[in-house]
Structures are given as structure tokens and as C-alpha cells.
Length: 86
Image (cartoon, rainbow, N blue to C red; front, side):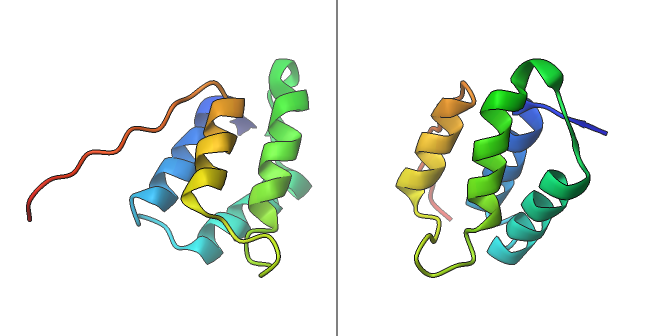
């Protein structure tokens, strides 16, 4: 499967929506770097973003909201927060 900016943005969104755990995001990123086929036209942008996700389990790096926001912007996306009653 070819990994695109959209693919990575969807993974970050899944993490932010608590659909996947931080460990699952890191595992995906590590596998994407090792085995994934990055979209050639976007490889220069995708490589550092995916690499950053791959180290999110290291305390020194972590993955705060601001980090996700910055990574999404690098991919050409803008996160939006919606607050709803439950």
C-alpha cells in the first residue's frame, strides 16, 4: 500500500480521536518507515513526519496536541476541535 499525506493524516486523526492507542500509532509509523512505500511526490515531507511519529513513545519526544497540529500542517491539513455534550 502506498502511504500518502492523507494516510498519515488519518492515522494522526485516529490517534487524536482515541481510535488507536499511542503504541499503535508508533507501531504503524515504525512499520511504515521500514516497509511502507511512500508516495514518491510526497516522500520528502512524509519521511520526517512518520519518523517523528515513530519516536512518540520515547519520553523525551512524546506527542502533545501541538505536535500533532504541527505534523498535520506539514502534511497540508489543519486540525479542528469540536466540543459536544455527552
